[in-house]
Image 1: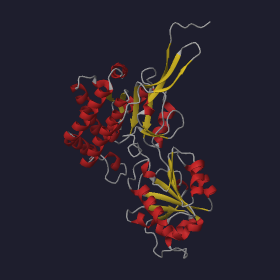
Image 2 (image 1 turned 120 degrees about the horizontal axis):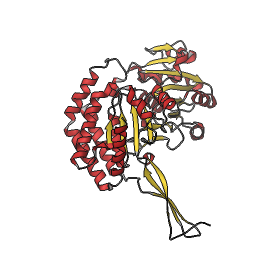
Image 3 (image 1 turned 135 degrees about the vertical axis):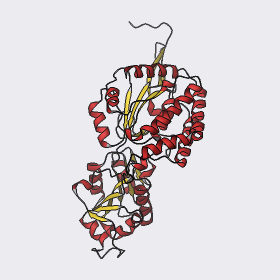
Image 4 (image 1 turned 90 degrees about the horizontal axis):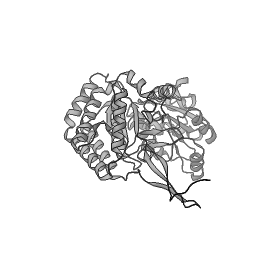
Length: 420
């Protein structure tokens, strides 16, 4: 493994010498080849899918389709169209002695990314790292082994065909031992980014000797305020929960103000079309079961269960959601503060002052007012793609794209100055 890391280091040094036109040329060719060779990628993906239970909610993350391949290629083109942040002068000052001090963006060098059964991440990481002049080491999960091998094989073929060093992207072995080696590659790897479940992130945080940036786990809430619009709320809750249940921006808990409890059945009704199981606290259970006759609907919600201690603070990644009734904005904020993973939180309200207070007080990477949390995505933010959603506060927060894959250095220019 040390040899792999050293080869990646040499490749990163060569990559730093390439101009942006060459970087864009390679990315556009990768997009073209991805579509042209989609058959072999999909065949490899079928091999992986065959090893996973059809009922496993993670299957959606693993699944590639012709439409998803086309979307991946378009994201790569979008990254190519964006300006590279490398070389940007962040600030420049001239000191009294004539020294000119410039603060300039530079690539990290080697970025290691550990991720689970999401083969699209292989494309995203490569495109963003390559455009920001970083070499990348990909440590995908065993569930996506064949998909990742086909994808990285394609990437390396294109890079070699352009006369460049293919070691700018390397797929590490799927076995756990490769993770251990990566996390201990001090001096060889500049940063490790885990993207996946809370368990994966916790493991990497606890065991890595290489600096890390945490991304991935999303325990997301939407608070329906006393002045929320019912039509907007129903659409936002349905979209946030069901668009793709296996992604980190999916809704996990709905909080509703007690004054709007009668509207809860209508707010949740669309979820029944997707067989979403709702774990409801006592007051919301009464409203959804029809026991609370003040509700605007007499039809009980068909997939209803009582809450348990695990119902809150859980990233379901499935057609499941919890509901809790609160009596004030403060109570909603207290719940979010206790259970949130600091990823994405939303409020539905027509009161602008309440919306602004929510936005100011919630501690999360992305805070939405009257918008679905499903928009927490680098492409949706105009970043082309993303490495992941950082839930920490140091260096990067929210969707990580090109600027977040750089650090900076100071370049000092002078004419013989010495210090006495």
